[in-house]
Image (cartoon, rainbow, N blue to C red; front, side, top):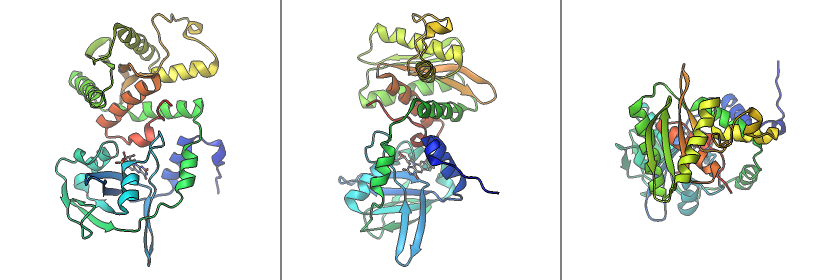
Length: 315
Ligand SMILES: Cc1cc2nc3c(=O)[nH]c(=O)nc-3n(C[C@H](O)[C@H](O)[C@H](O)COP(=O)(O)O)c2cc1C
């Protein structure tokens, strides 16, 4: 029996799922590099394998960030032409996952090792080997072109549906709500974002923060976006995109625009086996970026691969 797929008919997400689900098993490379200022960076890559022993050739598929900027790994390899591949031991498997969203500081006990090349350090405990110059960027042009394809509403809706499925907690209580709120507050402060953050559990506000730049208008946006999630158990951005796709408004669904805002930024707090038990809401940025920030914080808390989940930021 054979099954064939027309890649042109699939969404970007479906293509990704098909490839990572069928081309298996693939090892994961935790790649360490250094930037021009000597700062160490670590990130996991599962598009990785060896192609030949003589000459020794490794392939790592380093895609671009959603906004088309280079990932730090790609940037550093271009600059230094050196990288170290760490074959991760079980002891740091979870921390390796966190590195997919943060950077080396996410591995508190990591012990940088001196590599023979003396530049890109390895991480203990793991088996590592250093590849030094010349590291070549093959096929970079076509990757860029693919990523530059415009996303359709269908692409966005299918990716948000995936986000809502994957970003689900085993358990969520008042302490978790505060951790989520605090994490968002830290991310926003680090980036100088003037946003309002709300975490509501059932109908109870648990965490609220208004960072410099916020006005009472944001408070109202938070309320109206959150109402969308608590009404439909879907992210407010998905509800808005669906209405846009169908050429409808909230009023067509019998709701008042004064109380329901089908704009991005509020995301359901889902618990496995229970479904939606609340909402985390961000207001202050363009709606797509509000949505992305909420997703980023949830992915960090749940140690999920943000890169495969996030939507491209607002242009
Ligand atoms: C398990 C796992 C596998 C990943 N595989 C890849 C990959 O093959 N290619 C890629 O571009 N990103 C991959 N990522 C995402 C990158 O690790 C992520 O974009 C990271 O933030 C890049 O960091 P950097 O900017 O420090 O290089 C993966 C993430 C995880 C958690």
